[in-house]
Amino acid sequence: MSKLGDWASIIFDLDDTLIVEVAAVEAAFLAICELVHKKYGIDTQKLYHAVKNHGRQLWNAFANIQYCDRIGIGYWEGLWGKFIGGDRNLQFIRDRIHNYRYEVWSNALAEFQINDPKFVRELVDLFGNELRQRLILFPETESTLKQLSQNYRLALITNGISDLQHEKLEKTNLFQYFECITISGEEGFGKPDPRIFKLTLDKLGISAENAAMVGDNLSRDIKGAQKIRIRGIWINRSKKILSQDICIPDTQIYSLSELLKLF
Image 1 (cartoon, rainbow, N blue to C red):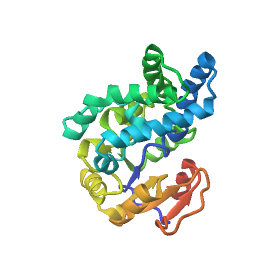
Image 2 (image 1 turned 90 degrees about the vertical axis):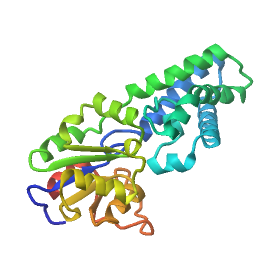
Image 3 (image 1 turned 90 degrees about the horizontal axis):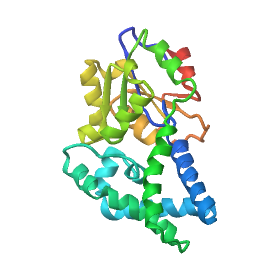
Image 4 (image 1 turned 120 degrees about the vertical axis):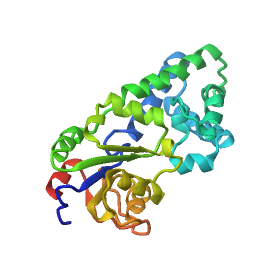
């Protein structure tokens, strides 16, 4: 991959590219399930799977799944997000989110013949707290962004609701590195929709040929970017087998720090 020009832009994904997400969510679930285990003796792993199952089922039953898929949000965000915003879909979720959270934990505990409303309300609050404590950067994130920002205009495209993505950026102090931040929940559409990439290019005032997209998700980040001729750099930390039926990234890296050799 050839080096880009001095005024070119590198666009980043956020979750599981710069910030740990999947592992953080799993750790938060397990921490809460361990609390339940200590109180009631329930198997931690069995409860963990029960909570996830009820989370998905209840989320799919009440949320507008087409909208959620469009902006890229899932059931776990329903367990801790505020869903701030004027979009009617956000308002609909916001009005029902407290009941959703209660029912997820209540229904999961009911599988083990536990009926403890007060404890359920505690778990609802504790999950968000546990997850917030686990909002951390990958070790190489900040040093890589700091070096790249000296010569390149950095931008961010992230799927998710506005309040959660802003909270993540504030807690990890990442705002300072990006000239442009585009959040799907604020636009009404997200990756891989070409519109969100085009919108970001327009904000930067550059063409697709002068940009590269760095992300961990082949379908949303890389294929979406390539649709409008932005070069796609797939960060594959877990060394997954490349699924060529999705797309072929222009470059594959295994750590963000490898970007310093490319640019």
